[in-house]
Length: 66
Length: 66
DNA sequence: TTAAAATGTTAGGTTTATATTACATAATGT
DNA sequence: ACATTATGTAATATAAACCTAACATTTTAA
Figure: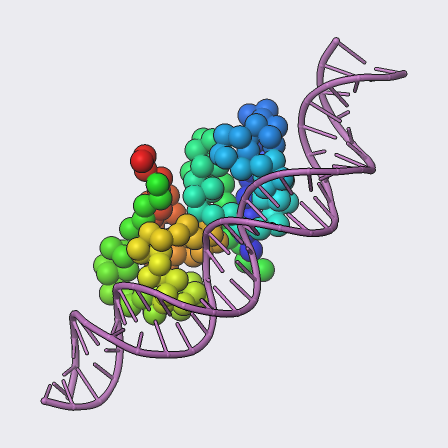
């Protein structure tokens, strides 16, 4: 199962979903879906998010058992 | 632009495209497409590939200018 | 306390990842 | 040389990512 820390890190930077979406070229709905864990974004988007949130991709998204 | 080292690392381990595909649950064609850089896989698949090739996901896929 | 901004969520549409099947060529082993 | 295995590549199909638009609710700020 795919897990992520997008919501937590976005909050840490005080970004809104719209702001973060703008930084990585997706809509705020896409950010919302990712935060809810509703789908697995492309590695391209994951890399952009990691860059925007200043963390390694592997620390932003990871696979868990179950 | 998205770049990756899948082909290089797969060769290092002596895996065929089919073998690697089996390890990460995709077909050999999907591996071939990724090696050719024809599309951006999901972060889930990217994480599985990184695990199979024993490298950090950020060292397997990265964004370059242009 | 009211307006604005942010978030939750849903529906329908487009694009892209991935599967399946297939055939051709290249490489490997006997 | 022949058979097998690996790779390149293409067509069509399906599933999933992502978009646009919309409306409701929650949070923030004046």
